[in-house]
Amino acid sequence: MILYGARGQAKVIYDLILSNNHLLEYLVDDNPPDHFPHNLNVYRPTPELLKDQRLIIAIGDNLLREKIYHEIKHLCEFETMQHYSAYVSRFTEVGEGTVIMPQVCINAEVKIGKHCIINTSAIIEHECIIEDFVHISPTAALAGNILVKKGAHIGLGANLIQGITIGENALIGAGSVVLKDVPANAVVVGNPGRIIKMNGVENGQ
Image (cartoon, rainbow, N blue to C red; front, side, top):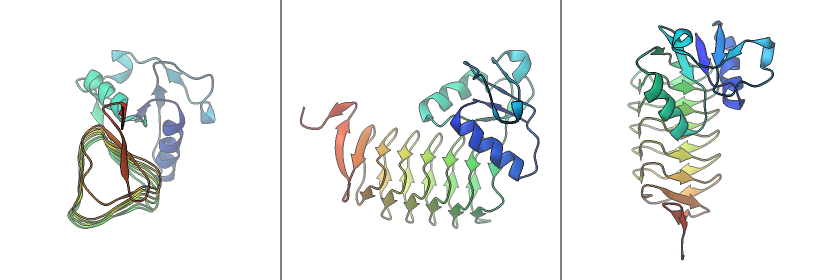
């Protein structure tokens, strides 16, 4: 197994790999750092290094993770990884390339897309749908029947009430309490959550 990416997210996933008694051969990164834990080798990506490998894209940024996926998907296969301490219902579906961190709880009939990051101690309740390239940050809590669309980022410790939809590429700020639907490309913060930016433009401008 190899990782694409050699920064903070890669270090966390490397630790997850070791905790699950797997072996990491090497990493690739477009701008290799001077050092990586255990002096693992980090190379610039080439088709030869990627071909036929089982790989996790270890990059926290959703848009960049998706971009890399489309660039390399014809070369390699993608590994799905779950920490042994996470609880994932037997009735849940998890897509390729998704990483589930320690102490996560995912309940019945949740559907998680490909190349998502479900971070430490996040809670996803029954029948949620998490589309591709989503990042659920540590300790975020999603009540039942929520739809999180592609590329959305749910911030640290955010709480989402049941039955709402979070639009594509939306950003929910840390600690926010979201009580209603959020449109695509919105930035939401606060309790209750309010939109402060849409499509990169601050509200009121």
